[in-house]
Structure formats: structure tokens, C-alpha cells
Image: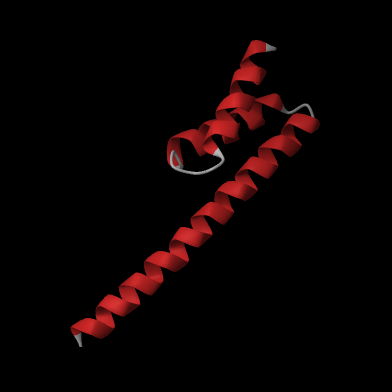
Length: 74
């Protein structure tokens, strides 16, 4: 019984991990779109969300770069 519970927990963890990275990807794409639409305030909010909520994501460094560029152009 314990083995089954452990396997279920591992599967759930792996599934949620994948969803999280997919979510970060969508956040980053939305932030880029907001930039293109000249909605810089919302883009900044989204980049900050990526940085704070997903610090280990592959998108974090990209979000930091975009955030710095947006704040430099204020």
C-alpha cells in the first residue's frame, strides 16, 4: 500500500512540475505580447511574477533582462 502511495505521489509531482514550466512559458509569452501592445505596466507585472514565483525556471533570466530593459526605458 505504501509503495502505491509513493508511486502516486511521484507521478503527481512530475506532472505538476511539467505544468509549472508550461505555465511559466505562457506567462513569458504573454509578457512579450503585452510589450508589443505597449502595455508595459502589465508586462512588468508578469516578468516580476516569473522572477518571484518561478526563480528556478529557464525563463527567469530572460524575464530579468526584459524587466531591466523596460525599467531603463521609462
